[in-house]
Length: 117
Image (cartoon, rainbow, N blue to C red; front, side, top):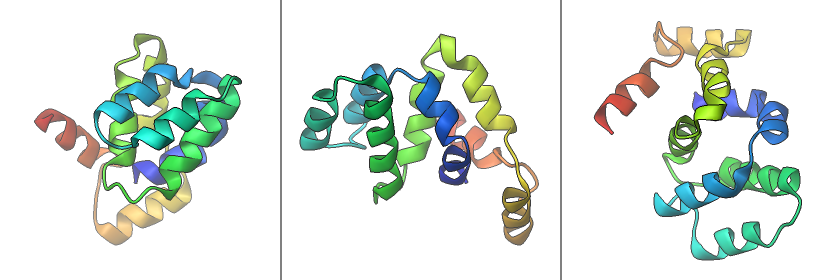
């Protein structure tokens, strides 16, 4: 669900997130590897760096890639508005998917997952 939300908010993330600390957080949590981190750090332009990071996460097989991205954003107090937007984001495809899964809260799993972290 978070992967879908981040895909729908892709441009907002790219335009507003400085990826440097996010990259370090994701490396620490083993979402991205040594080579990926090195490649991302070699990009000088912040929006390209963030775009490449998002593309990497969307193609990642890591089961918690977007949970960890969400956690990384939560560590950035200046991005509280973005975390709230992710929490509140819903479009018809999300609603339809939730109804198919019989889940009443769009971010219910995330809230449960973070209470365990």
